[in-house]
Image (cartoon, rainbow, N blue to C red; front, top):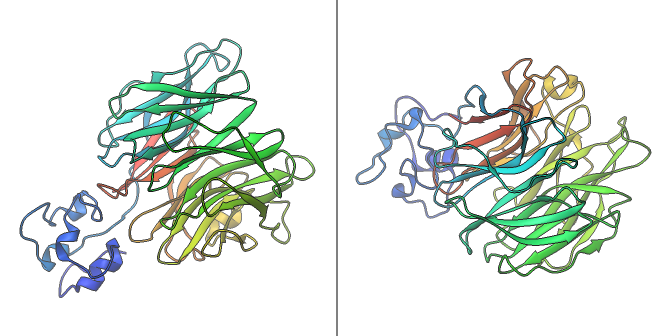
Length: 402
């Protein structure tokens, strides 16, 4: 919500809007710092020096998204993250002479709105290489980007904020789909290996373990998202096929150390043919992991505090979720105040987003209608501006929060 435009504002109200730990200090809330977005509605909040409560009139952690803007033609983006210094990295692929001549690539931006040309990592005239996910490793000071090389091999790159990419590992027959990093710099990469979900990990970004498969996640599963909480518990979500592509069972994996995982099913919601869980975050206020996904309507699920058990997914509220015609929530991000945003698209190519503060009540906002470019990834710059950024597919587009 937005803080009042006049009258008294309490420090607890500022804390509720923007997040932060206790005891609460007013200088925690400089604009452009770790909690208050550097956006026009927060222009009255100081960036340094003296700060007072009246400067927070009409301030807000989130007002919405800008109209989607083209990033690059003839491509697709699957992942986005932000460095501690505010550099955004978007990963995916693009093609110049038809979709079979695809180039795995990444884009960098220092502000989330101005982007350069893509940097190509791989090229194949017959295969379709791409990067599927990216995560910032604060310990190493680099992005970890993962994907495919076009020959059924998984690839792991480090990418500096200056744009230098280095191939660190190639793993045969490993369909890598997601990556996450904990506060100590341990990086875990997950995907499909030998028709099962598997993980590899590294503490230095250069030496990686061999894939270890995880039981309990069904046959030919796909993991779409992976995250880790401050206590060191890891959680990943996805789905596996039951009988054909119209029947999906939502799955999860969990670990207390990032090196040994277990897996299981969330259960199929009643009166559905299945759900694909596509995004997961840790919500510190709820002390739970929260996941969202779709197969038709959008669904959500909440875990216990360690991610080892999950509720059967429930239908997200709002007419968008009820009337969804084939596509739904594909990603999830959270800011310091606990506001969760999921970018989504329906069967009519209408783009929008869900938001929730409690993980069970989700409201939908339409952003643009009849848009070919679906949003496939979203991130929140939790270290500097607290701005969300969503990136999309086809003629690659992006939108940032206001």
